[in-house]
Image (cartoon, rainbow, N blue to C red; front, side, top):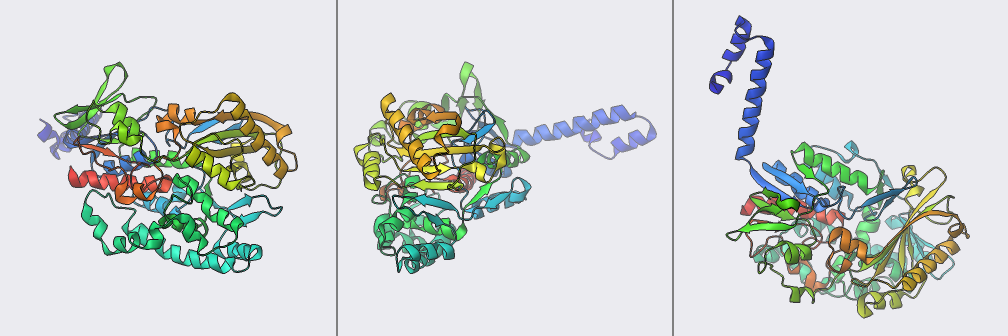
Length: 530
């Protein structure tokens, strides 16, 4: 009967009056649903644990490759650590806020027939950010020419030194984008590509970040401007290799933008792209176990013993959590004892403020280096103690985006790196908050502290409880030399077939652009190996 209905005879029956129009519609829908059901039955099924940017990226690419994809997310919104809270008319983003590597976002949307402008508007920031230190004058960082002029004014010769560094890191960035950032490192031969060897065997690439910066810039104040990015790589300038100094080109060569609506707008766009490909999202749903049968991942178990079965499982959840809590005993590739030897990125003190007045003297992005630089790094990375006078990053998105605060109000977010696994005593926490508030006050003419009308305070426990982050880390594994490239955790499980990992623990590493690239890489690996 279906074969008969699937021919032009159906329309002939309608024309001759054997079927009335409602019957025709019913038959047509039956055909459509049968065809769709048959198509779905032929599709492989994939489950993605976590709706961070890596999870949403891999989900979209797998759906494009004809997988039936379900994303299961324990929280109530997409974006993973790009988490948003609202209070009293203020919208605070507690995660990424630097819109970097715009080429990655353009390529992602282009892969699905879209442009960035289809979803949100990106406003270039100029200057990109302001640096406060113990000097009276600030350092404003923007594009190459303007920043070189600022450097030269601070220290003769350092402007040309900066240009030399950026010339080299520009070429390195192009090479890395073309040859390294898309590798899954599942085959050792990938390390023997000429461009990869040229990069990885360069002594300046595997030496320290600090040593490479100091070859080009001499003034301590300017060195700190170029080195603070290492915090977001999970380490200090001394233990992060020089290969990551190409971030200076990403910063000044490609520039920093702001997606209007914040990263929540970017997260919604990624979700929409996935849904257009057929991805199904389930929020407020906790995965409690990866189901393994005969050595293969065949689905996930959720509360009330609900099971979702699949041909493959991709984990965008915290790598340590998956290995130690979601897999059956004995199937982890990285045992607990080895996790104790891993170098984690720092955690952080997160402060969000709503202020009833506009603040002078600060930009959208600001870095506060007006305390003991080395003491802070020693506390966070060596002594692993709570720092009561930390360096910190201040974001004031209301300088660009009026939607994040009531009219004539200001929205502030502070990230102060703190040691992973360290939860402060109440007195230590208050001392740090008072110190940070006082330092912002001193740079805004005393307007800040007396006009705070809303606040939100979070520490290491926020990362641990909301994202199952190991020791409450904020950025995954640090990008030390022994935790970079082929030494990062693999994207494909060794003991469980059909289980893959995506996100900041794997290659290419930390940051929204990096995990977006990892999503595409993992999807390609799934298609190749499955």
